[in-house]
Image (cartoon, rainbow, N blue to C red; front, side, top):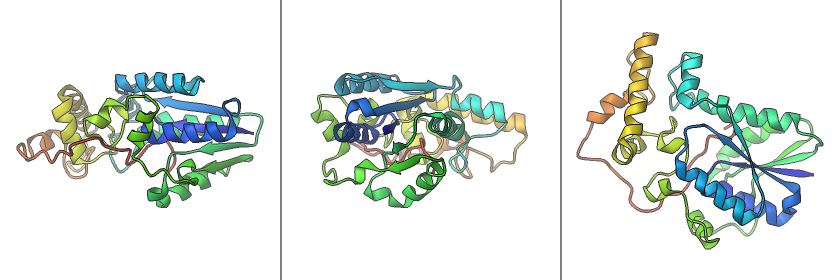
Length: 252
């Protein structure tokens, strides 16, 4: 049986890969990364370090489009309620890969832990509809990891992704994930103002082209342009190393 690990580019899924490899052996494991073509450059450094540590290659899939290009193709303003980019660039190709993979059975391993039990049902039901596929959550295996994920990865001699050090709670899409809230967009504006402006300009362009109502925006009830002017002196920034708080690589 093959064991397929969905790597997100974050610390949680890296620990999942480590646990699966140690339990089943690298010859029985496939590490799979879906590239949004919009990632922070340090994510790719992190993946290379993982390949060296695990002594195996990571299979990489790239649609070729960025999330913004997906939004343009489907004529839709991506937002934190409906993440069409995640479906097109991650969930759909990952599901297609699982469906076509032979021989089966295979087990898909995802990076959700005990704090995310409410999220486990949906991907398990979705992927296990495919004949010969089961789903497992190695972060729930005993012993439960008690250290911060960042500390575990650093104990391997690997530097954690720089977005964590900047306070981002994820390592997705270079800090501009459409699923994030106000605080992370403000953080992006402070740390990568060019990235913030790129998405803000795109949002305004799409609103103009689609003729959408004012409530159609990435964030609920406020555009990034409006957010830019909101509470300029109150950034509400988290200090210190952040941890993965969500992922968009599976169907929940």
